[in-house]
Amino acid sequence: MNRTRRSFLIVTGVLFGILMESPLYAQLHQPTSVNPWQSAESDVQWTFTKATTSSANRSSVTSFADEMELVRCSCDGSAMACGSGVGCGCGVASHPAGCLARPQLLGDMLGVRPCLAEHGIIYEASITQFYQGVTSGGAEQAFRYGDKIDQYFVFDSEKLGLWKGAKLIMHAESQLGQNAILDAAAMAPVNTAALFPRPNDLPITAITNFSLEQELGGGYAVTAGKFNFLDLWSQFYPDYGKGLDGFMNTSSIIFLNVVPTLPIVFNGGGIIKGGEKGVEAAIMAVDTNTTSTVSGVSDLFDKGVTVLAVGRVFTEFGGLPGSHLIGGTWSSREYTSFERNGWSFHPGHGITIPEATDSWLAAYVGEQTLWVDPHNKKRKAWFYTTWGLSDQETSPYAWAGTASIEAIGFNESREHDRMGIAYFYSGASDDLKNLVNPAVGLQDLQGGEVYYNMAITPWFHLTADLQVIQTEIDSQDGAVVFGLRAKMDL
Image (cartoon, rainbow, N blue to C red; front, side, top):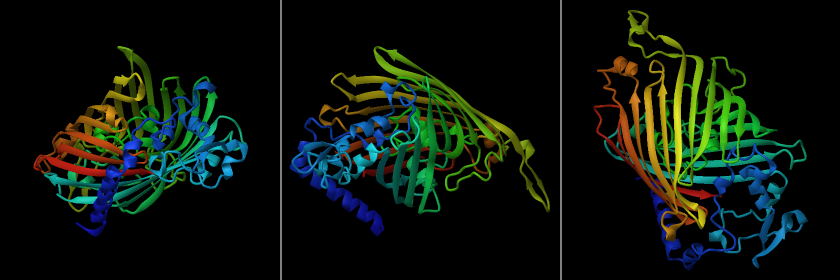
């Protein structure tokens, strides 16, 4: 074990031990008039859920800025309105419950954070450490340590003194160290967060989301720019965690046969329809080029376009909310064809690789709340499932599905902890199987994942994650993957 990994375990262990023994730890779990457990990341959701409805249903970004109008200044806990000109210059600002109980490690940054929010600039950041590895089976048994830094910016045009109803959203990501993605199962990435900006050639920093949203009225909004797929997905399902709070394996979160029609980072634009309960519909035109580390403007749509369309209805079952989404993609790009009859070898010229024009995906996503604490709406449990069918000639997956149950605060004494269990199955493309077998021995992939996310402080969460995967290579033993994830909201 190298020095970096050893340091991570020592620091995490020491911090956990100190906090558990501290008398402040018990204080953190007592109800207070100010809720210190408000999640920084959940406040900065890139959602049109409410942003595209009436002024009474503004986005979570806007409401977050409004909540920050009142900041706590000085050690006496007195409240000063930032708009008064007093709070903005209060100098030393702190949460009344102490530094360990505030929602972010850096607090309001001496009053800077709430003042920026008042003037239309919201900034949030987090740093997440991963120590994850394959304990048995898979491609390689090794533990790897890596870091992920996420920085989020939202610029509100109206508060900046410009026009009304627009927001510029920016997400900058940095990744350092290593990850265990290729050690376990290539077709079921064991660390979703490590896919961005890219899973290899580290360290790297890139802007993966730079998009403009403009409200049109009547619940509609138009958006254009550079999109991070996970940020886009969070507009529909803000609870899924982006690989930083909930499940780590991508297959536990979404159908992976979205590949190849939708890159993980892409340029595009479209119209989204929001309602009081969330996003109801969307249609977008997407560039088929991956733009994780480049602007992609110079070759925009030069290889084709992907059309993304979704529709969603909201339901109630037993008085508990749920939703059902039907969606799909169609791409005009030419992709490598897995149809074996098109492949041929010519002496002196090598292998002829055929191409197939266009590809498609059809998908369903269902979500149903199973339980909600009537006295605390943040304590809840829900069921989530995704299913996708795709073009077997161009996608490595014929179909993929997942089913999971997650809960927040299921134990009343640990109301801010989070847990989940998931099962996923990915059927490999028959065309791809026929092409590579028996040389490779490709098979369907399936697995399960369970995690427990413990809230040590409002800004520090420690997660233990276990995955068991039957990999896509039939000659490999099933991979058992264990990981620790330590996330700090800055």
